[in-house]
Image (cartoon, rainbow, N blue to C red):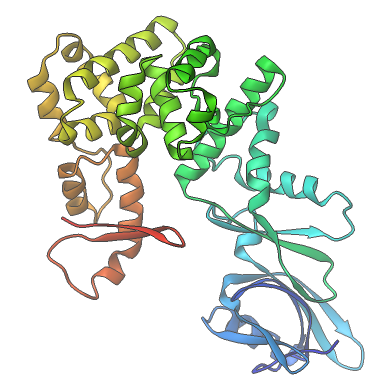
Length: 394
C-alpha cells in the first residue's frame, strides 16, 4: 500500500485515522530540515489531502491536532517520525459533544478499554452524578453511539468516534440508567415497558396504582399504542397525580411539551417523604388553578423549583397575584456579558433558568456571525439533530 501526503515536504505518511475532515491520529516522516516549518504549519487553518495510491482518502485540518511525540529516524535519510493526535482524543481537552478514542489494537477487550477511557474523560463533566453501582447501565446507553473509524496504513490503534446528544439528552441517559439500576435492585430485572425508564422516584412509585391506571385506559396494550414521548409524559404525570386518568390523558401535550421532568427530579432528590408529598400537592394546586391558562402553565412548570423555593407561602395561601407577577417577571442570575438583551427576551418568553443557560451559550457562540447581518433584536439558532432546529426571536 502506498501512502503519500501532498503539498508538503514530508517524505511520507506512515499511518492515519481520519474522521470526515478531522485527523484523529497520524504519524508523519518529516525531514530534519523541514521539521520546524512543519510544526509552524500545524497552527495554520489549512486542509491537506491524505492519499492512498492515487485516490484522496480524506482532506484534513491539521490545526485541530497537537504533536504527541517525535522520534528521530536515521536510515537512508535523516528525519523525525512525528505523531499527531486530535485535541478531542486528549482527556484534558475532550468536549462532551464529540470525542475520539484511541485504543491499542493489541488490547483484546476493546469494549472494556473504551468504557474505561470514556469515564476517565467524562465522569466529572456529566450534568448529573453517576455512581459506580449503576455505571454499567449508563454505558449500555452510550456504547451504541460509538462508531469505529477506518484507518489508513498500519496503525497500532483502533480509532473510535462518539457524537453525544445534547446536555438534556445526556441527562435523560443518566436518569434512565439510574432507574434501570434501582429497578434491577428492587425486582432483579429491568422493566419491559420502556416508558417506565421515565420514572423519577422508583422507591416511591406506586406500582399497584399504576396497574390500575393502565386498566382505566384500556390495558397495557392500549398504553403501548401511544407514541413513546406520550408514554413517558404519562408516566411523569402519573408520579405526581396518581391514578387520575382525566388529568393525565387530557393534558398529554402539556406534560410532553413542558419541563415536567425537572419537577420529577426535584421530587426524587427530596429525601423527606413528607416534603415529597408537599411538593406534589403544591404542583396539583397550581395546575388546578392554571391548567387552562397556557400563558402561565408552561413557565410555571419550567420554573417550578424556584417558584416553590421563593413562594411556598403564597402557594399555600393561594396568593395568585404574587405568583402571576413572579411568572411574568422572570430574571436570571449571573447573566454573561453580551447576553443582557437575550436575557430580557427570554424573561418575557418565560424561558426556564436551565433552558436560558443553554440558549445563552449558543447565542454567545454565534453572536459574532450573527452581527454580520445586523438585526434590531437578538436571534439565536441551534441544531438539535440532523432535521430539527430552533430559532428564537424577540
